[in-house]
Amino acid sequence: VVVVGGAVLDVISKPTTQFVRGTSNIGLTKQTWGGVGRNVAECLHRLDVPVLLVSNVGKDACGHGLLRQLDSLHMDPSGVISSSAHATATYCAVLNSSGDLDVAIADMAILHDLEWDDTAAAKMDTARVVVFDGNLSPAKMARVTRPPQPKSLNPRRLLWFEPTSVEKAVRVTAVLHRVHVVSPNVDELRAMCEALPEDTDRVDQGLVAAARLLPVDTGPQVIRDVATGPYYVKAASVASSMQHLFPSQVKATIHEHPNKESFVNWLNDSQTEFAHQFDNDARPLKHKSSPFCYLEQDDTPKFVGGCDDTLAFFRARTQSAPSAPASSASIHANDTSDADVKYDWDLVVIGGGSGGLACSKEASKLGQKVLVLDYVKPSPVGSTWGLGGTCVNVGCIPKKLMHQSSIIGEILHKDADQFGWSVSNATFDWSKLVSSVQDYIHGLNFKYRVDLRDKKVKYENMLGTFKDAHTLTLTNDAKKKGPTDVTFRRAVIAVGGRPKPLSCPGWEHALSSDDIFSKPDAPGKTLVVGASYVALECAGFLKGQGFDVTIMVRSILLRGFDQDIARRIGEYMESESGIAFIKESVPTSIVKLENGQFQVTHTTGQDVYDTVLNATGRSPDVQKLNLDAAGVALNP
Image (cartoon, rainbow, N blue to C red; front, side, top):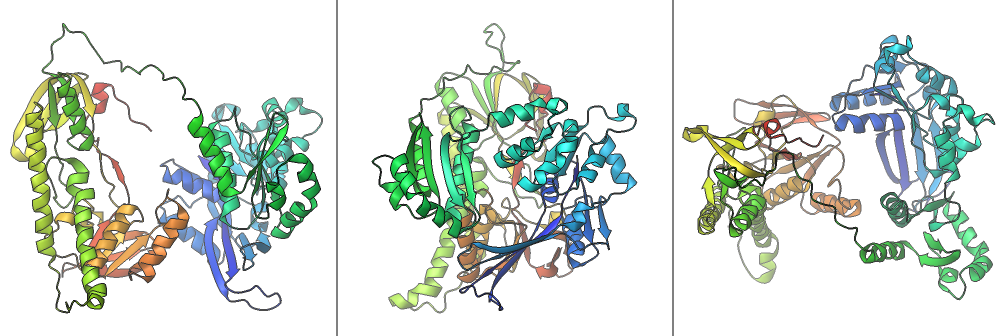
C-alpha cells in the first residue's frame, strides 16, 4: 500500500486558569503527530501491512522529529522528502479554560505543493492500493490517479480517497471517475455530490446514489457543539456506532455548532419551535447542555435528552430487541460421525488451561473417550510450569497473590502507625514470597491432575503436532518421550497465547509475565515496557513491595478501555504511587552489562536497570501445531 498525504504536528494548548486575550496565559500544551495520510500509514504498519508513506516535511525540528518517529516505528521513511521551501505542516489550536476552541491556525502549504521522487512514483504505479487524502491540490490528485504507463503494468490497482474535511473533499471532483473507494462522512459526501459537474455520467453512479439515500430528518438526531467536553463526543459516537451496527434500523445525523455560544443561541431561538414540535413535553424547553438528542419516528419527533439519556435509549432498544434466529453450525470439512471408523480417541483437547480442562471434563461426562495434551514450551529464559494454563500458573492467581503482598506492604509502611502498630523494622523477602506463591500453584497443578483422573480424562504432558486431519504426533523433548502417533475423531485447540517478544536487539534479556512470578532473586530497579493491564498490574505490585519501577509507554495507557479512567489510573500511579513514566518511547536496544544489569536505550534516552519486564501483548501459541495438515486456517 502507498499512502500519499499529510504528515502534521498537532499542537493543542489550553489555559489552566481563566483565559485572557492579549497576554500570556499559563496552561498546558500537548504535541502529537497527526495528518490523515500519516495516521493511515501508521495504522496499516501496525497491522503488519507493507506500506510506504509519501509526504513532505520541512528542514526544521518538526520535520526531523517526524522522521525520527517513523524510524522508531520501523516504518519506511524513503517516501518522505525534506523540503526547504516550506515549514513542516502544523495545526495549532488554542482552547479556552472551558475546553472550547477559541482559535486555530493550520499551516498546510507544504502539502498543497507535495512532491515525490521517481522511486515513489514507480511504487504508486505498482502498488496494489494507493490511498491519498484531501490535503493534496487538485493537480497533485491528478498525478496520483493517472493510470500507470503502460496501463497493463498494474490493471488491478485500487485508488482510495480520504476526503479529510468538507472543504477539501471537493478537490477530487475532476478525477473522481478514476477513484474506486471514497471514505467520506455524511457532510463530505453531500459536498462532493453538490460539486459534481452536470455531466455525472462520467462519475461513479454509486456515489450519487449514496448521496440520494442520505438521511435528511430521520432517525436519532444528535445536536451538539464542537468542543464542550466528553459528553457530546460519547453520545455522537454511540449514535454513529448504532447506525453502523443496525444500518436498516438506525440513521444518525450529527449537527455541529462552531462554538458553545452558537449552540446556546440555537437552544434559545428554538424554544417556540420546541413547544410545537415536542407536543406536551416540557423537557426540551428545560434542556440547557450539550448534546441535545431527539428521535424522529413515524413523522413524530420524540425528545431523548442528553448523553446519559441517549445511552439509556439505545441500551433499552438493544436489550429488548428480539434475537436473530441462530444459524446452523458450521461443520468442518474433516469432521466425521462415521461410527464404523475407529480412532484411538473420540476427542483430543490440545491445551490444559481453563477452557481445555472444562471442555475435556464435559466431553468425558457425555461418554466420550478424551485425551488432554498440555505442554509448556520454555520461555526465552527457561521458565516452565504445570497443568492449569496461563491464569493459574503465570496470570491471575500469582498476580493476585503478589498484589496481596503489595497491599500488606503499603499498609505496614503507610497506615499501620496511625492505627497504633509500630512496624518500622518490617522488611520484605522476595524469595520467600516466590516460594510461597509457587507452592500454592503446585498444589493447584496436582489438584487439576487428580480431577482429570476422577473424571476419566487421560492427561499427557506432551506437545501435539498435527500429522493429518485425524492424527497427532506427540513429543516431549525435555523428557525424551516420543514421537508417538495417536488418532482422533475430533480435536479442540485450546492452546491460549504467549507474550510477544520485543522487536529490538537484546530482546531475549527481557523477562515477561511467564517469568516474573518465579524469578528466584529480587527484581531490583525494574523497567516495565508496555501499557496494558498486565504491565500496570505488575508495575503496581513491584512498587508496593518497595522496588524502583519505571513504565515505558509507546502511546496511551490501557488501549481499548475507557480513556477517562485510564488517564486517572496513570495519574494516580505517577503522583500517588511514585511510579515513573517514560512516555511516547520504545526500546531500541537492551545490552547486558558485565555486572549483570541491563543498559536500555530507547527513543528518548538511556538508563540502566536490574530487570526489564516486557508486557507488550500476547499472540496465539500455534507455531508448532502444523495446522495446515489438519485443514485449519488462521484468521489473517
